[in-house]
Image (cartoon, rainbow, N blue to C red; front, side, top):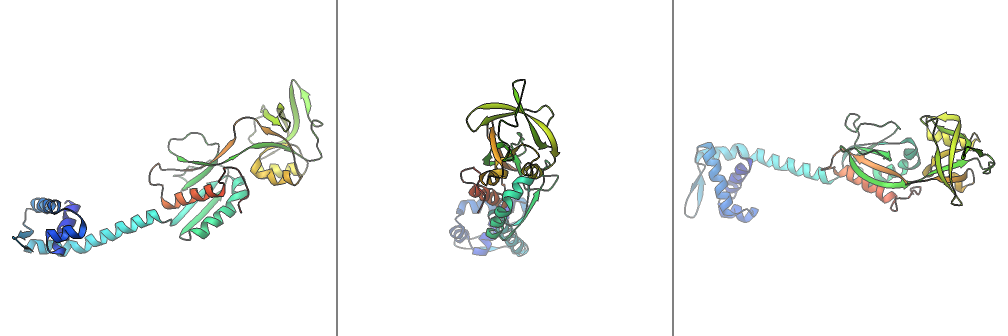
Length: 299
C-alpha cells in the first residue's frame, strides 16, 4: 500500500474536502485527487463519494480512516523525533585518541564539549593502538598522519612538528659524534623505532643534519620517553605539543626540528553521509580549540 496515498486520503477525510486539504497542506487538489483514486484502485473499493459541492466517506472509507488515522499520526511524530535527533546532539559519543594528545588536550576540550552538549554522553578512550571504528564501537578516531582509508572521512584539525630535544646541560655538538657523515647521539626512543632509523633535522641555525639515535632506553609511551629525557637519559624526537612547555621553561633544550612536512592530526569517522549531529558538534569543537591549526594548550 502506498503510504503517501493513505496519508493524502486521511488529509482529505479529516479536512472534509480536497480544497480544504489542499489549502491546509499546500498539496495541489489534482495531486490529492489522483493519490486517493490510486488508493481506491489498489484496494478495489470506493472510499469517497464525490458530490458537486461536498463529499462523504463510504463505509469502507470510514473504516479505513478509523484504523489508520492514529497510526499515521504516530508515524509522523516518530519521523519528527528522528529529524530532531539528527539535528540536536544527543546520545553516546565514543572517541578514541592517542595517549599523548588525549592527556595534553582532550580533558579540557572534552569538558567544554560536555558543558555545551549535556544530552551527549561523551566517552574518551586514550590508547595508541589502531582501532576499527565499527568493530570496536567508536564514533570518532583521532589519528596522527593517518594512511588513506576509503572507508573513513574526516578533517585535519591540527598540525604539529617533531622536535629533537635533550637535557639542558647537554650542549650540542658536545654530545654528537661524527660517524660516516652522520651525527650520532645517545637517545631514548619509542619501542617501535627501527634500529636503522635516521632522523633528518633542521637546526635552529638552519643547518640540515642527519642524526642516528643510539638507543639507551626504549619505551612504549611517549610520555615515558619525555620523562626519561627530563631525567637526563638521552635525547629524543618528540611531538611539539608534548614538550613545548618544557622547552619554554628551560627543562629541555631544543636541538632541531624534523625536516619535511608537518605532522597532521586528523579526526576520522566512518560515514560519508549523515555523520550525525553529535559527530559534527565534536569536530566543530576541535576546530574551535585550534583555529589556526597550531597547538596552543586549550583554555
